[in-house]
Length: 293
Ligand code: GLU
View 1 (spheres, rainbow, N blue to C red):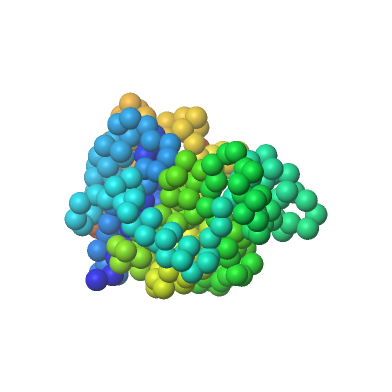
View 2: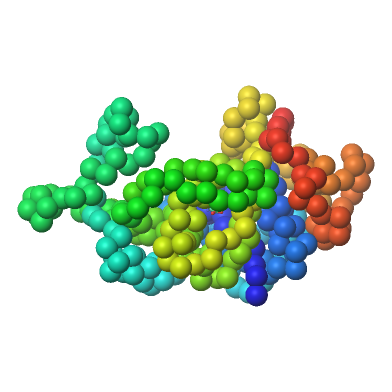
């Protein structure tokens, strides 16, 4: 059965922009009869207690999900299996570059925008043996770009380089884990912030290599602060807890989010469920939401 998802990284409390993206992911999934799954992306930057607070906040604004919450840290075997398949097909290689070497090489004139230039693509056995640091594992991509279709952006064409599949610390990299999880969980609709639009071509290409179906994408506009920068915790009263301290409960926040999405009028009070019947992706605002505290 088809499904959508929200996939928060438990690095701290969700802010209004994150809650708004979650609301949209829920509306897209539920209004199209899909299941809605919650997947905690805890392969890095985990803050103690953040997952529980994030899930409680999502529930407080009226979102629900199907089945148990999944956690990437418990799905290592799936990632290892995908990496083993790619390796068996000759589609991976070890990379010993330091972050600094990559930055220097990527800014060289022949390297397209920030792409990994393939420094370690063809190392000999001797060259590898002479390395002293542990390697990351990269994809041996046989394309340099790939297209995806996005509900809000139309056809999007973007760069694919030899991106990292397994980090130096042995943990699956974000792009690999997302693709494996979406495929394995039957997720056919990916709604997330448009800061990830440029990752979609890499992910769709990797899905094709793993013979997984490509999901429908909708990369939604982010919330920005008054300076036009991506909303962050330091921008003031941006979490449910901060809003509560100002006397605004989760229902008030939901009203605020719904207004920002032009789903209700200025004086309407709604629940998340109330928004389902009239939800129409074609009428969503296409520009960022500026949140001024
Ligand atoms: N975990 C990612 C984030 O919180 C989202 C990844 C995704 O939706 O593909 O930014």
